[in-house]
Amino acid sequence: MEGWTIFETELGWMALAWSSRGLRLLRFTGPEPLEVETRTAPIWVQEAAEALTRHLAGESVDLGRFALDLQGLTPFARRVLEALRHTKLGEVFTYGHLARLAGSPGAARAVGQVMARNPLPIFIPCHRVVASNGPGGFSLFGNLDTKERLMALER
Image (tube, rainbow, N blue to C red; front, side):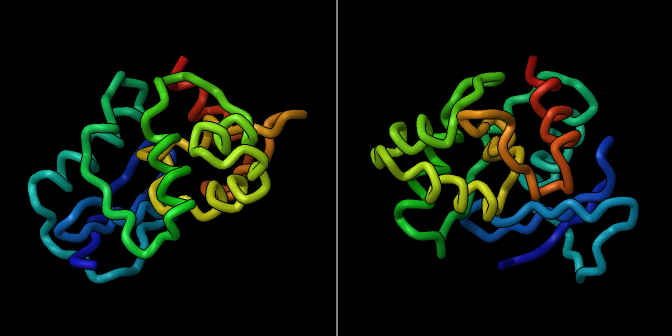
C-alpha cells in the first residue's frame, strides 16, 4: 500500500488507501478521522475522494471510472466484485443472482462473505446486493439505514 488520504463526507469521515495499481481500501471512520499516517495523494486519488464525496452529497457521479487494486483477493472474490462493479446504477441483485453473474451458480453464501469483506464499498456497490427474503446485512458502515441511504442515492 502506498498511502492513505482522509476526507469528510455526508456520512462522516472516510479513509481511502491506494497503491500504484489503483484504489485499495475504503474505510468509514464515523464522526472522527481515522488515525493513520497520510501522504499527499496523487491527483487521481484526490479525484476519487472528491467524486465519492459528491456522490454521497447526492450528485450523479461515475465511480466506476477509477482503477482498483484487488490484489490479494481470491479469484472467486475478484470475479464477484468485478461482476458487481459492472452493474448499472440503481440495480439491485440477490446474492444468488450475483453468484450466477460471477459464474458460480449456487454460491450465494460465499457471495455474502465476499460482500462482508468488500475492500472498496460504494466504489464496488455491495449495498445493491440483497437477500432473497429481504435487505440482507450491511456491516460496512454500521447498519441497514446506511444501506438504504446509499440505495436511495442511486434512484
